[in-house]
Length: 380
Ligand SMILES: CC(C)(COP(=O)(O)OP(=O)(O)OC[C@H]1O[C@@H](n2cnc3c(N)ncnc32)[C@H](O)[C@@H]1OP(=O)(O)O)[C@@H](O)C(=O)NCCC(=O)NCCS
Image (tube, rainbow, N blue to C red; front, side, top):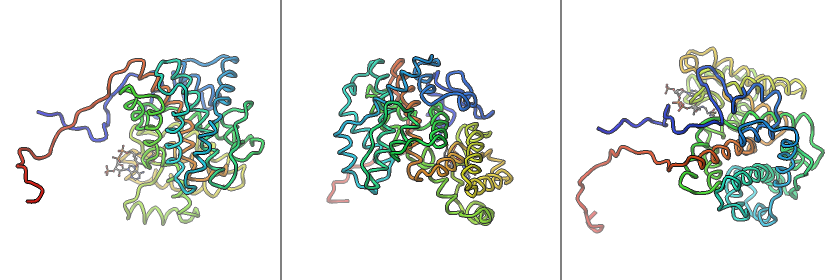
């Protein structure tokens, strides 16, 4: 008798991993032994990248070395910049990123080398290059020349610099840095699983990262941050929250984007941190409307028996949408920013997969017909 299929693979354990622990019932997230709250308060994104790739924190020299190597490796080959300029300006930025990262493999001398040394080099290069691709694309689609990364900046600062050409604003780069720390890694999420499945066939890191980007794009995963912001923009004013909730959620069949999670049945700890950041940024920017809408909608959901019974809380994408919007990022760049962070987690998992690999190949229950008679095409 065949086993019953587990829809969405819920609860199925597919690997042993040292990268992160996601405790859904208590709302806890730990990277390599460090609680996310500690990392959000103290660590830079580069420090977290070192931690996830090396299973320990860097010393000062190692951290500076990683920061400057990422900044150096962030430079794109001229051929890739020429390609970006040939893409349709209306292209979805995640479709652009998926294509550009795939193309970048063909200019990478390490692309077919699956040794651990080459994979570490590629993890660093991809982390730098994905940021440059995102910033370059935003300029190209707005009719501007892309700006090369600076060797003296952190990844978050370089992103702001390459977007605007100006000296990076401290508030915006700090907000991006903490966002990147919070989004760098998250257990066996859908895109990480896709990356691991891809490389488990003996394919290469770029292919694994491309699978990750394609998977992250969906609104049930990384696409939710942009969808959440579009929802707040649709609501438009705090006084519209209640009628909008009644019409679209209670009487309609829509979902609140940025709420609910497969693993978290308590508050996502990243959402708690981002709520505070979003509130502080809203107050300091003098534009509190979007935060007020988000807060009011979250409160309406938290008071509603449907959401209470199903244990649906804001996830990481909910308040991050407000943070990113407040620092004036275009909404369709939110998910690429998620990829800028998650490339670190994907690459850490890819290295882990290669270290103890076996082809990932689950089974399926065939429920189709049997024993059909063949009818020639001209008799059908
Ligand atoms: C994240 C998500 C895909 C998890 O999906 P899942 O674990 O497969 O859970 P399900 O889709 O089976 O949802 C379970 C129940 O909660 C409801 N639900 C889940 N998220 C909901 C939301 N955001 N708004 C309203 N209802 C929601 C479902 O309708 C379902 O109700 P039912 O049991 O009566 O059918 C889902 O919560 C969602 O779509 N959230 C919005 C998108 C989002 O924020 N994604 C980013 C995740 S980090």
